[in-house]
Amino acid sequence: MINQPPFHINCNHHSIYTKTLHFLTTTTTMEPTIIVTSDFIKAYSDGTIERFIPETSPASLDLYDGYKCKDVTIDPSKPITARLFIPTAAVMPPSLPIVVYFHGGGFAIGSTTWLGYHHFLGDLSAATKSIVLSVDYRLAPENRLPIAYEDSYASLVWLYKQKPSDSWLQDADLSRVFLSGDSAGGNIAHQVAIRAIRDTQCPVRVSGILSIHPYFGSEKRTELETKVESADDVKSNDMFWSLSVPKGSNRDYDGCNLEKMVVSMSEWNRFPDVLVFVAEFDFLKERGVEYAEFLKGKGVKVELIETKDEKHVFHVFRPDSEETKLLQSQMNEFIHSF
Image (cartoon, rainbow, N blue to C red; front, side, top):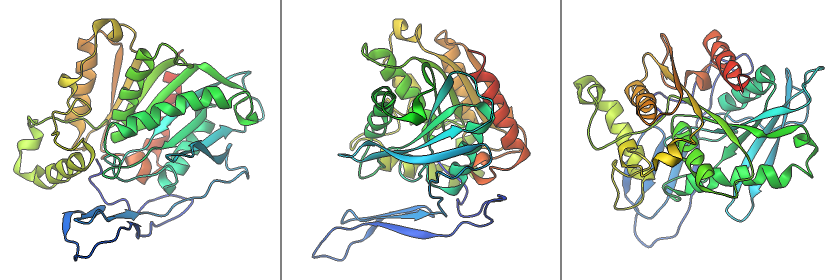
C-alpha cells in the first residue's frame, strides 16, 4: 500500500516527480464508468486502467556513484522484466551476494524504473557490495494474485540460468541470495521464500529476507485501523486489496492474512532468517510488528527495527536522506552476517 502521493521526492539527482497516465485500452460500445478511483489508479467498467506514474529513470551502462545498471528480461512471453545493478568499487570481494528486490505499490502500481527506487537500489548495491535484481512483476488488477508471486519466483530461476552467460553475474554467489522488498514487495518476498522452500529443484539458496514496511492484512481490523483518523488510510488499503486478491476473495485470502497461510512446521523450520523494518508513523506499522511476531511464533529467527519519525516507504521518497543511508547500513550488516 502507498499512503502518501508518490509525485514529489527530495533527491539530489532530481527534485520533483511528474504525474503521467498509463492506459490499458479496450474497446466498448458503451461509455465506461469509473468503478475504482484514487490518487494512484483508476479502474473503469470496460477494463481500462489508468495509472499515475512518477518520474522514471532509464538504465545506464555509465557508472553512477559506485554502481552501474541495465534492464533485463526475465520472461518475454508474459512479460517479466527487471533492472540489474552491480557495484563498481575498485576493490571487490571474490563473490557477491544477491539481493532480489520487489517494489511496493499495493500490487497494482509501481516499477523498478521509478526514480526513487532506481537510486535507492543503485546506492544499496554500492553500499552492500551486492548484485541487486529488482523485478517488475505484472500488476493487478489485470494480473491478480498469485501472479505477482509466480513472476517474482521466476526471477530466481532466471538468475541460475543466466549466470553462465552474463558477465554481470560472473561473481554472483547463488548460495547467498536475499529477498527484499517494501510494502507489497515485503509480502512478495515472504511468498517467494515459501515457494523456494517447496520447490525441491530451486536452483538458489535463500539466506535471508529483508522486509521493509510489509503489507499484510485481514478482514479483522487492527486497533489503528478502527480509529476515525485512519479512515482514509483504511479506504486506500481496502481498495488496493480489492484490486489485487483473486476475484471472489477478500482480505482473508492467504496471500493477505498470515493466519490463513497453510505452511507446515517442516517448512517453517527451513524458513530463512528475517529482518523486518517498520516506520514510527507508518499506517502499516502494526501489520509489520504482527508479521515479526507471527514469524517468531513459528520459530523463525527475526529481528525488528523501527525507524523513528518516518512514514511509509520513506526510502523511496527520500533516497538520499540520512535515514535511508542508515537503512542501507542496517541491510548491509544483515547481508554480511551470513
